[in-house]
Amino acid sequence: MSTSVQPAIDVLIARFPDIEFAPGPLMPRDKKEDEQLCVRVPPDRLLEVMRFLREDPRCSFEQLCDLACVDYLNFPNARNRFGIVYALLSVSRGYRLWVKCFVNDPDPEVPSVTSIWWGADWPEREVYDMFGIRFEGHPDLRRILTWEGFEAHPLRKDYPLHGRGERENFVVVPREGA
Image 1 (cartoon, rainbow, N blue to C red):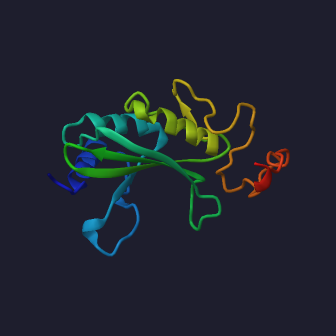
Image 2 (spheres, rainbow, N blue to C red; image 1 turned 90 degrees about the vertical axis):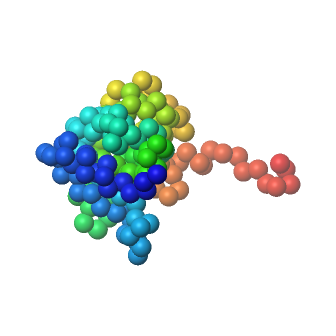
Image 3 (cartoon, rainbow, N blue to C red; image 1 turned 45 degrees about the vertical axis):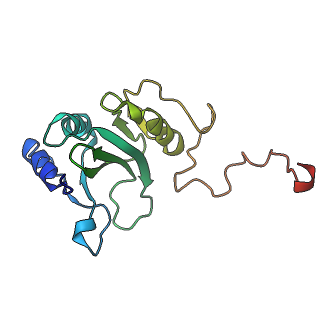
């Protein structure tokens, strides 16, 4: 089983020559054989690229392992506010690929990948709830960790560390009284 994802990246670049994928390491490492690679995909091309990565037999990314978001507010040299990160796994080929899709305020939105990997359902809802990223076409985009009517997004870097008053109404229960 191959462990290098480079052939899949080469196929991806050949299939979509108009997209600047900027393949590179997810995190720089000393040993190149341990390097995990990522590509960048613009939001308007995300669905077709992700569908290709899953369906093309030269790629075969059957599994979406994780979907997360990074808030790049005040990050040095960052051009975009949010990065949505998709961790893909090709079980049959034995390699992984990370796909990053960048969006900005005031209305950050990307297409939902639930039509490709149904397992994206709850992770997309978590990112929506915690960061406010809308996933266009999601079958049930509603809050999952906070309550409906909660107006903020707690994992954004501009959210106050002590919250916005939602913790002041709880009764303090001492250990002796629990």
